[in-house]
Image (cartoon, rainbow over all chains, first blue to last red; front, side, top):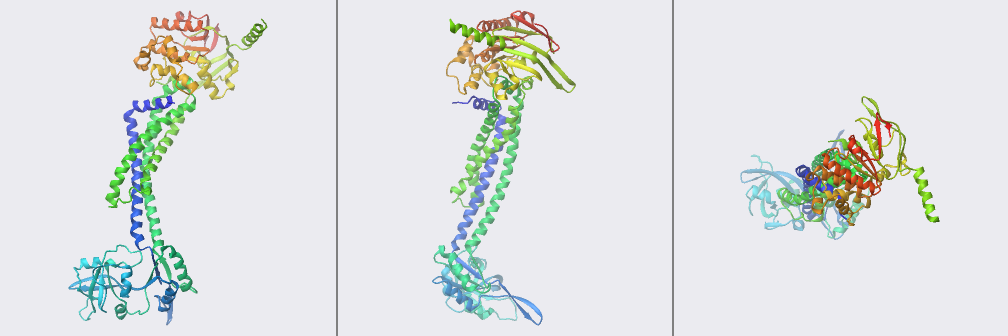
Length: 398
Length: 240
């Protein structure tokens, strides 16, 4: 059955084509804003997640519990490292999984005549290849060999065999020198705490010889072979090491991943909220158009009511009109969001791999539905107003 | 013989107890900024089935108000209005709407066709209201034909029709649900004399077919068509 009220609404939209078009454009913009922003946020989350989940199988153990020592009445605070017995406890509690103790610090250095500053890691050369990849050269062989990150290497024009003087540049002190044995591949942000791109990695013996802290580590990483057992392994470490007192803090990348994801989720919600402001503006314009439509058709409404049209039918007619505006706006907006969303994602994230995944592309139908609902809600009051007119007054209107 | 007697007795009873329309002491007061205005002042009136009544009076005498009451577009401030024995004041809004749709055919001075619909659709519209579906019985076309509209002319929108043609469509629209009562509010007021008489001929025909025709006019020539003339002045019936 073709509803005559729907017909009337279609004709009214056609009759006021330009006005209806302008109102619909508001919805188009709103739908595009919501969908594109939603897709942008989701694509951002997905691509960051993918980058982060590469090292998600690593448990980071650090000692940030502060020990206070009373010395001559002055209470000094000192950070405590992970000592040998704790390391042994960790090793016994994780079974077959790899345990990588790491020394960590910052240092100034000089290459040729250029001074620089960067992170420094000290670890067993045998552990390095368990989670880092060497791009050029080879792993550390001699006691004075070092690996450098790609950023530091390119910034200082280093190659295999380059010499690095470690420590503050000072004419009166002879500084130790290491030789670059290899250059690592780019790692980006490392959720296991080893940000090697801008770092110098030396053997643990070299590190403790020059900085002290032998057998006291800043961080211990455990690489879990079976990711599904990561929580179990963490619990085992916690039980063994934190038996009596809270000695170490145990974190894994998955918890960091989830906290980053939730932050990104908040950002997505925020940009969605910005997008929805445009829908609010669109709602106002639809409301305005609907009120104009009602006010222009007062006499027609009077005729409809006086010859026996039910109030509900008059309401339906105006809701159809709002619905038509919504469907047109949402349809065009849906197509527009695909085009604009794709452009925005590729421009701002530079990666459209995730664009057509359900999490992302679903924002298009969501946006469209929201657009239509906004139209219908905006049409409620005008429709109610039309249906509750007094037919005699309405007929008299010119 | 017995059956006929029973029928006569029944109709006789219903006719005598309930005229088609009964206004009992109806008063209508409009609350205006300048004060209350009594448009109808204790009006009592019976109109029987198949009467042809003209309501006359100067402007402001309450002609339109009484038509709005009869068309159930409004309800009395006090007093009662019965249509087919039912008290309009006790009806729900929806019931009143359905009486407007099914029992009363309203013809206006300004035709009041729906501008967005063609002549045919204007006539079909009350059928859709009643049956909730498009007309497949050909009734709308038949009624249009009875007022002189062929298919081609029926496809025109109201603004493409002359005044006389529009009024014919309005009559067809009022007729299509086969109402008992035809309310005609100055039906010839916007038409030239010749067209006006043509329209009156249609109304006379309807009366002959059994409709109750109630006509508001200030034109004595038009009022002559009626069998009973009710004169209003200041909201009161002064002659009937």
